[in-house]
Length: 435
Ligand SMILES: [Zn+2]
Ligand SMILES: [Zn+2]
Image (tube, rainbow, N blue to C red; front, side, top):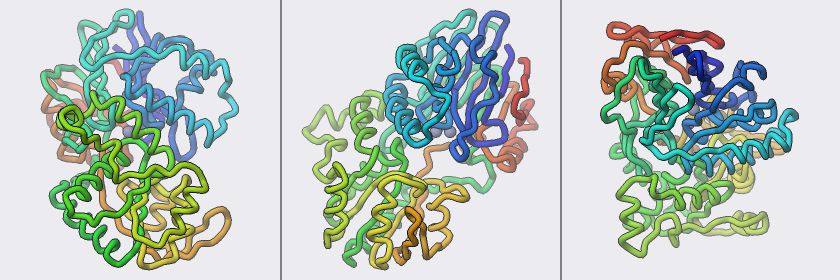
């Protein structure tokens, strides 16, 4: 089998890896690079020769190249899980709206919607001489590790992976894995990338929220629409119900309302405990009476003018667009208010500027004074360094490791943990390897 890296090579973004034999060519993921919308390095000719695309999960760095691929003449199937397909439909529509790509055609979009093939976890399916399988990856709902085998050799691709249980999901399923090669993400690959656990974080987070509410302040929590938003909402709901956070309204704004519905429809893919809670009681945390969806601009305007304390959970997670900017305009000047960041904030994003103490913020070409408090609590959906080191140990017969989806220094750091036992490569874009 040959592995060719068209993206996520010494970078985070445009994940796209070809696995090929004499008979079959498949792509694992088809993403774009979010900062500059860069595409995988595959040519249109190569793309049209692909037999199938398999998508690990719905994030744009793994799936947003799909409308481009179909507009460039690709007509094969796209295999993925049901939640991933439903989330992609929402996220790709939003991506199209934000980027207005010139190369995407109506025919391409129609073809994309007609070529989805839904696959269950842990059900092998065949593409020519390749046997493929999706395995729960614990990253976001529907996310999968992908195992590919030609009968002689096999490869496991992590996509994005998380080994620890969250409110929403079980950790990745690493039972009985066997493979010759592992292609692993390395987002938090540095020795210093150790996740704080919820037990340590939760009391600090709760105190921070409580203090602001008791002072009559408002809290803005910017979040990604998929995964983080649901985790944080279920977390807030639990603690309001148990009385550890004073009862204030939680307003949910932006795409999160759509993605909440998709999570509810796919609760069968979530953690057992969450399913049981819904099945065995009248309580449905996805429709909690503590949440109020914001519908339309008028309602948003009304909420912005209310005097009482409240919590708003809204997009975008990196404070680069979306309704969060509106709330910042209205509430950013008041030092009683607070903004809580819960995800990684890359250089150049609004979130990072606020984290670094910016006291002025430009929104729609107007300068907004920032007096509100800014705090960060990490709720990562990725494996940390300890977990990344553990993954190869759980795979029987493993000999080769390819490190992708990370910053180059973190990849080097992670590589040093593996070299004594495995043949480890940090591939460059366009490179191919035979196993
Ligand atoms: Zn992801
Ligand atoms: Zn990713």
